[in-house]
Amino acid sequence: MKAEGKITGVIGGGLAGLISSILLAKQGLQVILLERKMYPFHRVCGEYISNEVLDFLKREGLYPEFLDLPQIKFFEFSDTDGKSVKIPLDLGGFGISRFVLDQWLVDQAVRLGVSVRTGCQVISVEFHENSDSFSIGLADHTAVHADFVIGAFGKRSKLDKVLHRPFIQKRSPYIGVKYHVKTDYVRDAVALHNFNGGYCGLNAIEDHQFNLCYLGSRDQLREFGTVEEMERQILWRNPILRKIFKESEFLFEKPEVINEINFEPKLPVENHILMAGDSAGLITPLCGNGMAMAIHSGKLAAEAITTGRSRKEIEKLYEKNWTGEFKQRLWVGRNVQRLFGSGGASVFARNLIERTPFFAKQIIKNTHGKPF
Ligand SMILES: Cc1cc2nc3c(=O)[nH]c(=O)nc-3n(C[C@H](O)[C@H](O)[C@H](O)COP(=O)(O)OP(=O)(O)OC[C@H]3O[C@@H](n4cnc5c(N)ncnc54)[C@H](O)[C@@H]3O)c2cc1C
Image (tube, rainbow, N blue to C red; front, side):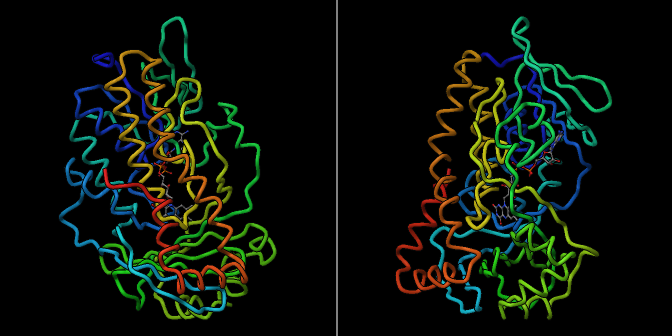
């Protein structure tokens, strides 16, 4: 095996970074995981994970069996007027907060010998042809040497600018907002409630809590000045959302908010870096599939490094497998998003789900992968 005795530097400790690190460490390889934040922490994410990852997580001993996690079997959809429809999900999923999941995975990574360095921001990555290796520059002016690099630094990082990735030039009209709440809702369904300009998800996670997370509009936030006022003026026009916001107990002091959520296509290999998870492409959140894709692409990156016999072969293998698994899904996700976040389109989508559930299931199927 080409990778034996070599060091892999993994930039970013979200799902893609943690899974690739764990799998490489299981193969006896040396891994340094560089994460700019300190665990545990909250992230803007709907925290519904598709069951396509379930077999894999269980097989690898990475499913947190000790938690009583909600098993999600139904999908509820409401249009901007609050008219809703509910259908069963073929594959379904489960709910778990990233606060808990990422901490659980980082514990497994440390146990398996991954050198996890937190509070460690990467500011540059250079590939040196002469030595056929990388030097990873850190914010504290030190550098880490690595033979392979997995870029798992999420949907948007300062590193994208440093690496001159084209998507970073495009402004995004979206913001993401997340809360944990206690509310009166079933634990076996994931809901997507539309409002003018976006959509809001609701599903159970651990500890009798729920995740309430939406993709909204940067312009609306600017217009109304605060998140709270925007919610009252825009989200509350959907009566279901008004009820949820008025009657739930909010568990965070303030919401988690991010902007610049960009769904532009990206490349899976750049500057000899294997890009995994959102670094290779973010699927629109309505698909509820980004976390499964991050886990799966982390697995593909680790497999490419352990099986490829040369750098060229590793890159080719990863690019081929990544493209086969995800390119089409990302495209479908971008196009389906048009059916969300506006009055007419959301009514059309609700009618479609109600009258032709087969078609709705096909869309879900085309934005999801098979269990692996
Ligand atoms: C509003 C919204 C709702 C969503 N809901 C869902 C859902 O319900 N289900 C689902 O499956 N997916 C959902 N997603 C998508 C999902 O959150 C992502 O696809 C997933 O988190 C990607 O994981 P990742 O490992 O690629 O990136 P991340 O989890 O973002 O991890 C990247 C890590 O890299 C670190 N980092 C960044 N730059 C640097 C640097 N320079 N140096 C060191 N570290 C760095 C970051 O701190 C971060 O920890 C949603 C996304 C949004 C925006």
